[in-house]
Length: 71
Image 1 (spheres, rainbow, N blue to C red):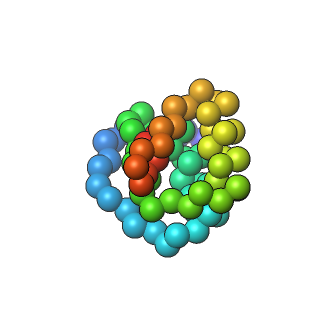
Image 2 (tube, rainbow, N blue to C red; image 1 turned 180 degrees about the vertical axis):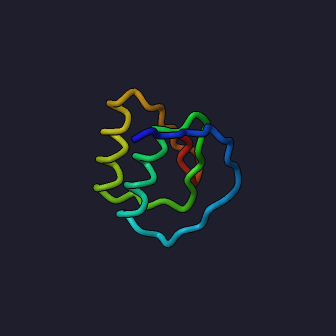
Image 3 (tube, one colour; image 1 turned 90 degrees about the vertical axis):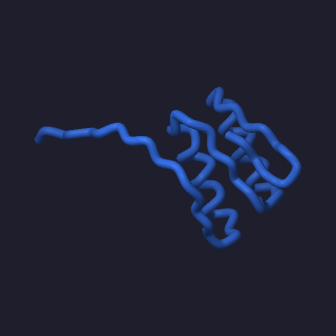
């Protein structure tokens, strides 16, 4: 089976419900992006803090700003 991959540039805003499960997935996906991602209105529960620590171990830069994370 041949696979065709196209590289395209996406931009915009996506709003999802406040869910630590969704935020954990977004943090993982952000590690595969070529550009920065801003995540606003985040939870600061232990699960999210743990995921951020683990993402940083993968040498993905995560910066906490006023009310958002920049990855």
